[in-house]
Amino acid sequence: MNQKRILIIDDDIPLTQSMRINLEDTGEFEVRIVNESGAALDAAREFEPDIILLDIVMPGLDGGDIAAALKGEPALRDIPVIMVTALVSNEEAGEGAVVSSADQVMIAKPIRFEKLLQAIEERLAGVL
Image (cartoon, rainbow, N blue to C red; front, side, top):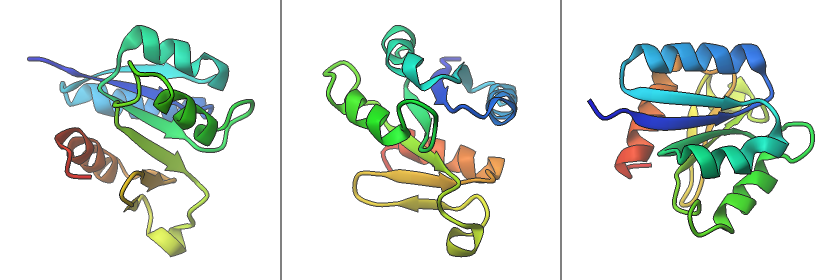
């Protein structure tokens, strides 16, 4: 089976470990975690992910800076990104809700795994 590669860029270590375990347990994904924003671009270049899960608020470079840098590199610009954020309240978006626009997909923290998995599958298929 050809596993899809997911790069998780988030400074929340317990969250990233939980996401890795749940995603790898499906048997569909190989997951790499980067907990320091400064290492994000090098990790993306080296790992060559099929999709990136990117926290918006992190020390150092924030998710917006990293997303812009990814778009600025020809080898990385077409990798789909799902922004992971606590900036959208559960009341606004519903717990673990997925919010999408023409060029951005966000999933609200706290993350519900079923919603995350659905967003990943749809983003990889080009639906989101």
